[in-house]
Image 1 (cartoon, rainbow, N blue to C red):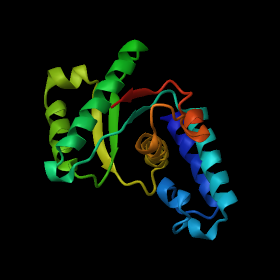
Image 2: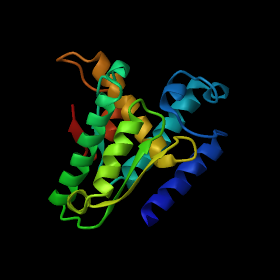
Image 3: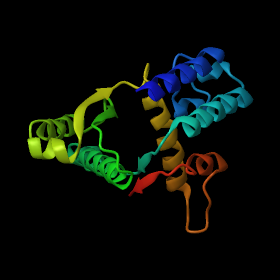
Image 4: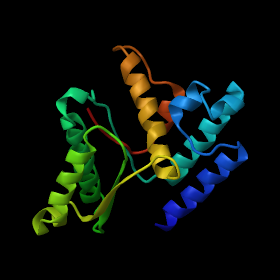
Length: 187
């Protein structure tokens, strides 16, 4: 929690430095509001400063890329939530982390209701809550939550790479810099 608080303070300092109310990678990349008041060079500087913060503070991370088919009533999102939770548990077991885990997801996704029901099942089962080291869960807005904004940055970078790649393509340097952390991945 202390590490997260320091991360959030530093993240918010960068936002204040550039006069930004929040960070959203797709808006930064396309100079959409509120990034439209920045030059291309400044928008890249913001992104790079925030990526350095992620690298300096992150212990581990997980990135999943799914086809979020809105017609499946949220099943694809639920599948991703399950994969994310499994990845966190695998990480905790491989590092001998024995503490509780609070799960946070960005609010508003198609399938949030299904995911919330699944997480409540975990919360209400002694066996499942023990297995998943469940301490709680929440769906949080991106605005006002630097950790969700950091996840957005990684997700955008990874999604942007996977939708354009072929078998010979390399990830952009900014994504490769982020992936030098011990990230877990799922497809």
